[in-house]
Structure formats: C-alpha cells, structure tokens
Amino acid sequence: MNEVRILDKKFRELISEQAIRKRIDEIALQINRDFTGSEVIFVGILNGAFMFAADLFRKTELNARITFVKLASYQGTSSTGSIKELIGWNEDMVNKKVIVVEDIVDTGATLERIVNELVIRNVAEIKIATMLLKPTAYKLDIPVNYVGFEIPNNFVVGYGLDYNGYGRNLPSIYTLVK
Ligand code: 5GP
Image 1 (cartoon, helix red, strand yellow):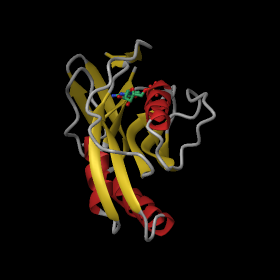
Image 2: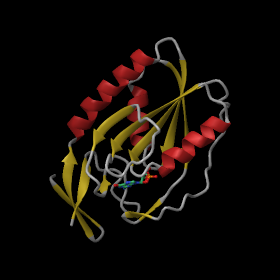
Image 3: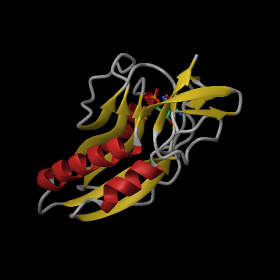
C-alpha cells in the first residue's frame, strides 16, 4: 500500500512497518542498556504517541511503569502554535527517572511544555524518546535522546499520527503528497 487517501488528501509511504519495528527494537535495546537496574516511568504524550509508547514499552525489560498525558498544538496540517491544557498528571514523579515518549517532535513546543512540567515536579532525570524528528523545524536546545527517524519538514500520518482524526491505524508512516 504505497499511497493512501485520507479525507481530501493523498499520502505516500515514507517509512514501512518493518522499518519501524526494527528501529523500535534498536531503541528498546539502548534504553534497556541505559537504564539497567533503574526504576523508570514512561510518559506517553496522547494522542499520537499511544502506538509508539505501547510498542516501545513492550520491548523494554526494566522495572518500569507507564502513564499518559494529553496536550495538543495541532489542528489540520499546520501548527496553530496554541498549547492546550495539560491533563492526566497523576503519578508521583518526584526523584523518578522519566522517559517522555513523543510521536513526533516538530517545533518542540509540546516537548518544552512537558519538560517544564517535569522540572517543576522535581524528577530525577528526563530523557526524550520520539518516533519522528523534523530537524529543520526543531529549534530548541533540549536534547532528544532516542530518535526513531529524522524526516523532512512535511506533514505525516500513520502509526498513531492523524490527519483530522484519521489515519492513526495505518501501520506505516505516510507523507503528504502536495
Ligand atoms: P510541536 O509542538 O513539536 O510543534 O508538535 C508536536 C505535536 O504536533 C506532535 O505531538 C503531533 O501531535 C503534532 N504534529 C507535528 N508534526 C506533525 C505531523 O507531521 N503530522 C501529524 N499528524 N502531527 C504532527
């Protein structure tokens, strides 16, 4: 399935399901090594990261917990820049090692907000894992520790990412055909 249509737009396959799976195995291996013997909390950012967070979490062999929070800055295919309310903080994160799990880091506004929230909560350590990173859009100094794939600055869907609510169930990642 190289091309798909979602609502009024056409998308072309960018990253295959197999490539995603292989990369998650590699990242999980790295996280298992980096956090051996530590208690870790994975914090998945809803909605987009639910699939990556689940697949990554399943591959970890750590004394780990997972929780999800929600925050969104996107409507349609371009960033509105407006950050919505953060919901879902219910874990005691004080002095805990946290891995923030993002679907995609674009401008980094979402990431910055999450990191600020964690800093306020005095966590012991913050690492960032993202399935996708758009390096040309990302302008922050916050290091992104585990990156699935770097991609061009185009709109993508699939593997948890949506276009107006649709496309999240596509097993591969697709890029917008203009
Ligand atoms: P940022 O705050 O880094 O600009 O954007 C991060 C959030 O915007 C992501 O968690 C995701 O929900 C959304 N986003 C950014 N780029 C894309 C994209 O190419 N496709 C989709 N579907 N969502 C995106």
